[in-house]
Image (cartoon, rainbow, N blue to C red; front, side, top):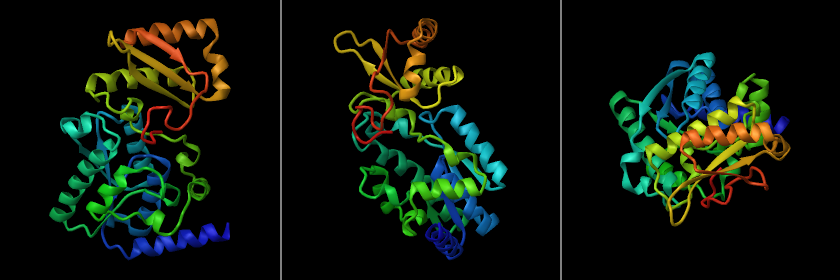
Length: 276
């Protein structure tokens, strides 16, 4: 723990040297921790920027805004239009680059107009070596990653988040709704809405770690939902009553076929591109 605390002090030192900071915030484990530390260090000289995007579940956005208020941090919501960009909507393997490009471009404009000194985001040490197209956009816009710069890992971030009483300390990994769609299949407002309704329904039933992977059946184009659940929750989903509830609800959301993935939830889920 001594080494972790040393990294925390190094992080604080870096933040103090960054002047006025714009921070890309999502409400996830890493960016929430970074926002908390940056706010404690910089106060009004730190402004969190959160994207209001169709690919972000409304519940996640609301929770993120609520947490920023609890921290006391200054926060601004910006509308992002990545779905209007064909390079994003076509859903290539580097889709995340175009999403981050949109956000960082807007942050750069805010920084120039309002004289903010440094842009930062929540990439951390464990992300090094992963396929992360968004990191290329960060380099392009000179967005710094202070967590990565001090070598802070996910385990350390969770441990320190717990010490700081952040509710995100044990939050499961979360990625945008677009990550539920196989690369090459278009990302549309309609499909994102179907996925969001399906995942919100699973949450209302008390499931904790899951993904609804969206597929189009070849030939007829009908929508199939492939449910990935945590291994210890698979049995509950196969209960006849529960199974019937899920099937009826998902058909109401527009899915013709509903399948339970017997391998359970795992990173990527066979969608490609390192999705979560």
